[in-house]
Length: 274
Ligand SMILES: NC(=O)C1=CN([C@@H]2O[C@H](COP(=O)(O)OP(=O)(O)OC[C@H]3O[C@@H](n4cnc5c(N)ncnc54)[C@H](OP(=O)(O)O)[C@@H]3O)[C@@H](O)[C@H]2O)C=CC1
Ligand SMILES: O=C1CO[C@H](CO)[C@@H](O)[C@@H]1O
Image (cartoon, rainbow, N blue to C red; front, side):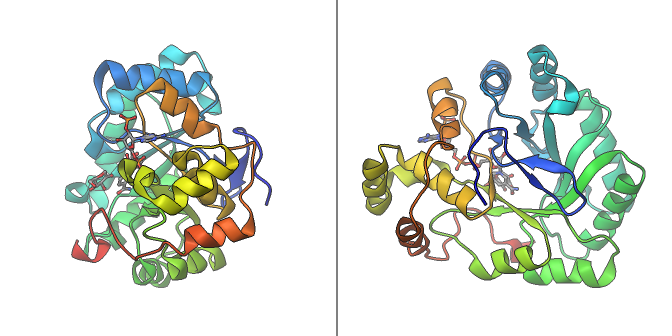
C-alpha cells in the first residue's frame, strides 16, 4: 500500500477511516499541550490520542474547539483506565471523557490494558457504546494474542484496533500477523522509544542516506508496516519533523535492517502483568 500524504487513512474493519499519523499526548498538559494540538492540527494532523489516565482531555477539547476545524474532520481516541474497568464503570468513564473533551461522540475508544478478570466485561460495555452509536470504532490497547483470542471467543465484535508498544526494539511479529489476519489495525505507541531512536547507529546511518532524521525513518518504517503511528512532541519543530514522512520510501533492504534490530525489549509495562 502506498502512503504518500498526511491525509491518507486506513479503513478499519467497520469501514470507518483512521489517519495513519496521529498526535500523542501522554505527559503533555497546559499551555504547551493546547498549543501543540493546535499547531499539529494546523499542519494537517487529524488524529489526536488521549486517555482518561493522561488527565489532559479538557485541554485537548479546548484546543480542538479553538482550532476551528469541524469536529467530523478530526479523529479523537480515548481509553478507559484500568481502575475503571467493568461494565458499568466503563460506561461512566466513557461519558466522563466525552464531557471533559466537550464532544458528543468519540471516534475510537480503547481498553487501555488487559486487566485480567475485567476486560471481557469492559469489552461488552464498549460493544454497547458502539451499538448505541456513541463511538465510531472500538478497540483495545496492549493486548497480546491470547487476550485478543479470548475476546474473539467470548464476545461478538472483534476489536478494530490494537494500540501496542511498537518500535525497532519491539516488533512483535506474531502479534502483527495475528492482527493482520483478523483485520485488527495495529497502532504504535512510543514509536520513537521516547526519544531513544537517536541513539541507534543503524538508524542514524539510514537517516543520513535518505537525508531524514532518525525519527522520520522510524515513523516511515511504521507506515510501511501498515501500522498507524502517534508520536508525541510539544515542540513545533519536532511536530513538523514527525509529519514530514510522506515524501520518501524506505527500500526493502532498509526495512529489513530495521526489522533486524528487534530485541523483544519493552520500555513500557508487560501486558501480562495486569
Ligand atoms: N496505550 C498505551 O498504553 C500507551 C499509549 N501511548 C500513546 O502514544 C503516544 C506516543 O508515545 P510516547 O510514550 O509519548 O513516546 P514517543 O515515542 O512518541 O516519544 C516521545 C518523546 O520523544 C521526544 N520526541 C518527539 N519527537 C522527537 C523527534 N523528532 N526527535 C527526538 N525526540 C523526539 C518527545 O519530546 P518533546 O515532547 O519534548 O519533543 C518525547 O520526550 C503517547 O503520547 C500516547 O498518546 C504511550 C504510551 C503507552
Ligand atoms: O498510555 C500510557 C502512557 O505511558 C504510561 C507509562 O509508560 C503507560 O502506563 C500508559 O499505558
